[in-house]
Image 1 (cartoon, one colour):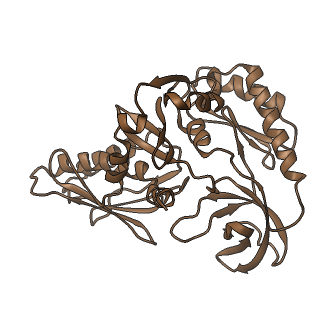
Image 2: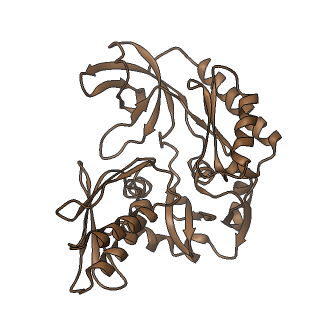
Image 3: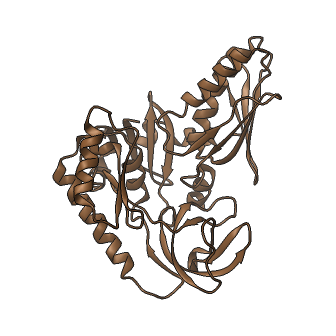
Length: 361
């Protein structure tokens, strides 16, 4: 996405990604968002086959799965890899990552990797070579797409900043449980991670100093004549994104239901005769709604039945194309014999419905 909105709405500061003048993704300011936060936690208990439940203090309990199980009662450094959702605490990992605009610092995972979105015209190789010269033998980085147009000095300066941040985290209190680090500004992190290099931030006039302090050096800031939340009907966009049924322009609809086990999406033809056209339009709408609502986990999509394998493959491709540029890891299976597409999508943030509920309290 190369355009974003930054506005001071009645419910609080809000950032939105824009696609063709419409809202594609939303982020509401919520200082207590724990995504990416780092704690020194205390292991409460270990459940074989499930993982270790870790006491995070005021932030509740998280689940550490995979790897060698820690001992009950031990303290360990953990990071939220998936936010709390649906009454469940955050998922935790033991390989911390500190994100900047140009790179992600991985102090416990040596090596150099690069974003697949970097141009393969020598830029990726040049930046990986630069990174290898800058990192030590026991640390690593992932070069982000935004680094393509960054000066080498800016890249090195950011690495120094992230390295210093990690050193402060390591030197923090040995007591457990204790919060060691949390993203200072979730809106800044959202725009840093999702706005394309060279993008534009449309900001309320009163937010100009705030937008400039965000440190998005390759972004252009344009000031709006009226508050952005009014200019783009943001409250209406949020309310539509919370509706369980979404009408399709050509007729028919999709319904979205969030359950504890999965997100279930049903395509209703509403009398339309052309099942292929219906499913193709529905596939675009499904991809849009999943990203706008911030949905993750297991997703089941029940399309209208198609007889031809070639038509089912077209719908598969249309659905996958709708997630182009989506940073969340995703796996999609082909149509099942019953016409259902199964998908998993990484949870990178609290779903919009929960964000909205928190801001309205």
